[in-house]
Amino acid sequence: MENNNTEAKVPTLEVEQSSDIDKLINDDIETSDSDVIVEEDGRSGFVKLPHGLALTVAETYPITASEVSKTIILIGPFDSGKTTIETTIYQLFQRKPFAGLYFAGSQSLFGYEERSFYTRLESKKETATTPRTSRFADEIFLHLKLYDNTTKTKTNYLFGDISGEEIYSHLGNVETICEKMPYLKSVDSYVFILDGKQLADKNKSNGAIDQAYNMARTIFDAKLYSSSTRVQVLISKYDILKKNDDANLEATIDKRLQCIVDLLKKYVSEVTVHKVAAMPELGDFEVGYGLEELLSTWNKAHSDNQVVESYTIDCKLNSEFNKLIYKM
Amino acid sequence: MYKKCFIAGLPSAGKTTFLAALWNLINHDSDAKLKLNKIENGQYLASLSNKWANMEPLERTVPSGEQANISIKLELPNKTTFDLQLPDLSGETFQSQYEMREISEEVMKYIEDANAVLFFINVNSIKLLGLISEQTLLRSSTPTTNNDIVNRNPKEDDPIQIQVIELLQFILFIRKNKMLKIGFMFSAWDLIKSNLNDIKPEQFLEKQMNMLWQFCQSNDDIIKYQTWGISAQGCSFNEKDLLLDKEYPYERIFVEGNGGYQGCDLTLPLYLLMGDMK
Image (cartoon, rainbow over all chains, first blue to last red; front, top):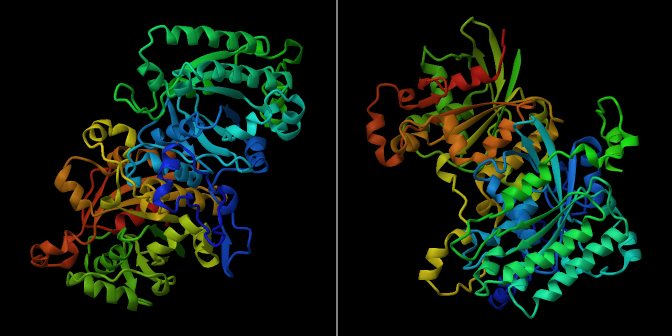
């Protein structure tokens, strides 16, 4: 869906008619970030302020170059809940510190709000939904700065909000993914998402697992990782999976997931499995189920054995440039 | 000596009522920490103060009616005098910064030069986060489908604490992260006291605007803040007869600080925020 409203300076979700409700509920609307950054000259006597939307790769450089940062890329098919995971973490901070971390700022507040609106009562929707990420959008990173009260440190989290269609268009193609997404090389964590709704459907379950396996293989065979890269294999919409009557289903899926974990452990040492229900449909799960553990995994300090011994430096490194050696 | 205090807040946050009450107080209350030394450019404030004293509703400050050059000469307890600049800007000006992502050069200059910021937040405007997924019982009992499409209106739909945090980030951005002294002024505080008598302004911030509280806690290297509960009007206009019976209009003001202060001295937040004025 394209945004034709070139006059609007504020982001609007592209739903103009009541008939679009089905698309909304099906998580099938696009954000209009790429159209929102107004390129025209500002009004006379006025100065432009930061746009507050998702950031481009280039816009993340000032953050990653100057402050402690972690880049998290969520990879999953269309409607698997990538954006919902990102926005739910953000929204839970509106109530209280989360996973022992405090909210310390964001350069994407407006973008987060845009993506969160249809999960809130103000939207007057019956079902929570988040806008679909536009395939060709350049603004893919949502930013959160979080403060760890224990270590007294601030860390910038950059969440890669890449459209499912975009990254899956490179499935099995090492060359194109290296060419189109070179920034993945410096990723701190990959999150491979398997849609719990698909896993609960025996007609789709095997395909969903195979797709995740092949996507992981494509990325790692393309060498888009470092020794410190972590991987999380994540089942989203876990509430829907649990609703399934087949008692053996989850055990079967766990077994299949272990194959993905075994594959990934050939490349990196830290691979964990997570089960998440960010915005559950059933009353048995709390909003944000599993997200606290996920955020803690991202925030965990790297163990020393991930650094190649010959590269170990016998002094404290302060500059982010020097610390790059630990990310190589 | 010049001091500049930047007054910020979204529409109906109580900025103008504060200025009206402040003018009345510094003219009449001998116990106030800061007193008026000399009337210079007080026409606008005097006009506001007259209406306020009669409990007449003050007109909302619109962008075209902004008073950017309000300056009052104040006197400290030690008789030192200083000029305090307090621009009365429209709440729409701040809302526009949030929504349109631009700021006038004039306002930017005020922010750059300010010694402190008073940020007004109307306690009535704060809504707690309500998520659809937490309304499952409600949904199951009302299975009707809502087909009305509601488009997000950022200034009305985005939580107040998010808009406040973004405006603070703008201020920090403009000041290049230079230390910011800020006083959060929770207006209409009489409504809070009637419901939650024991709550202190700092507790209110933590309980009702937790993300803003986290933001301040985690950025204590660049933000020094205080919290105040104020009722510059005293009560709602429906109950004005009660307040009109008071001997002096300024006696209707209620100010509460975290250190246990309860009284009518609206100059106290200014005095404490502006720092060393010797």
